[in-house]
Image 1 (cartoon, helix red, strand yellow):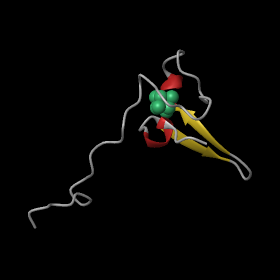
Image 2: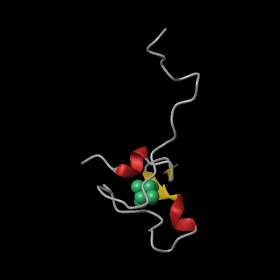
Image 3: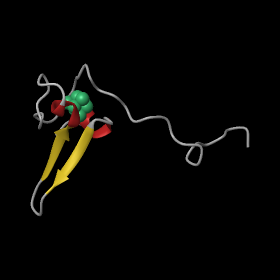
Image 4: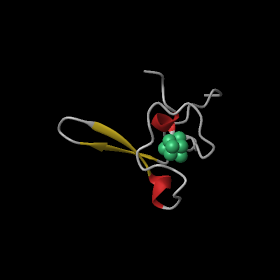
Length: 64
Ligand code: SF4
């Protein structure tokens, strides 16, 4: 399966059961234009939001 934008989107929440894994779009909770469980893979989405920049503890400083 192709990579999905949802996997790297901050609006995605993973829902797991003992046998399955679902990709829940949290935007669907406030906007009916987005499905709660978008068919995967999502290759384009106008609401895609990448996760924020790394925190100071995770950032690599090239000067050091
Ligand atoms: S906003 Fe788009 S890319 Fe992000 S989780 Fe929802 S459907 Fe996926």
